[in-house]
Image (cartoon, rainbow, N blue to C red; front, side):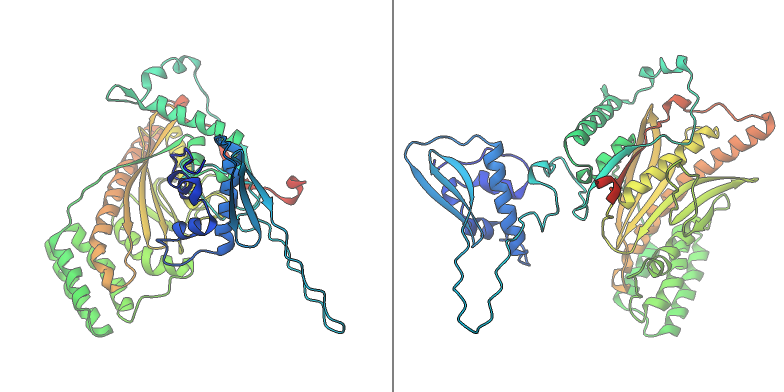
Length: 493
């Protein structure tokens, strides 16, 4: 029994401690020292103690403990509130330690307040430890979701007229790569996620699994792009020796813009545009970005306006431009890029911004962005746009992620993570500007291609008085729409 170790190979650092140490080392003090060893700031002591006790309960309920007749008695103590004992036959049993008896107050003295017992789940919310999804099943988790949540399925407002004969060709339209059917792997992942929703609380679902329920699948893409030497040299010089005052920064920006226009290099021109806006402001220190409006105005607007404003086929709309709504949900993205052909407007880029790196209490901005991209994709297909692509931009704090979505096979919306970049916060980080603009220009080029396809579809519609046949066909589109919502007081009752 003394040499027994837990049989666990997951990623949970708490449970991993008990698999790496024999039961003779399962004291709370050794556990606390090991868990907090590499942390610069010591975590809350109550949280650490509750994590320890919950882990011990999991050991008791979920693992087979070998019996030992040697009568080992081992006491594991968690400070003054709780203990866990290993007694005799090797069965672990949690017990509650008696509170020390308080001395009787002397005559005439005020009675001392009695300490209140601490609810061991208070710091971790109302979820029981046995209903938490293991860390290897839940990435992008949301610790702020501590209330009751429910997952609902809602029918979309778009009516998809499906031809039963076209469904027979679905198997021939699956996404196959190197003799491996990626479509089937995606569907298996969705079925697994549906099983998880029946066993665990919806609040524990990761962003990735919430998207899978809506037939959206995230993929990474390795993209290496070259950067113009001239614009990089400009930023290097500014970082090494910034202008001394506002007037000198304007003179420098004027010279940079002149050189950029003479070079006819689009990246140089966009870099000069952004520097003209940010350099006179940043010369006196980084502006405030604690609220979303100032964050967008000072950091994101110069980048996006410079890149997407240069294309005559693309138009921009800021601050809550409404997408075509679903029956139960109205989406208002923070930034839109759309094509306007005649009087018909089609969105090609959707964006969500947040000033601080902080997950939402309900669905995160990433989940909202992906759903908006899928909704936009469906509208383009219904309008007869051939094999459209939709772009997405997701910014939180100093992180900027770009995405491209296409419909690769029936019911598989492929959402590719194209770039993960860091925004500059001051002039000491301005050398990352050319790289940011390069990736945004790639996104603009994809949006430009979609805009050309949109105009072709609109011209065909006007010429033939009917929309072109959908390509891909309508049965490729998904109508599944799952929403994570916080339970109201009425629902809790």
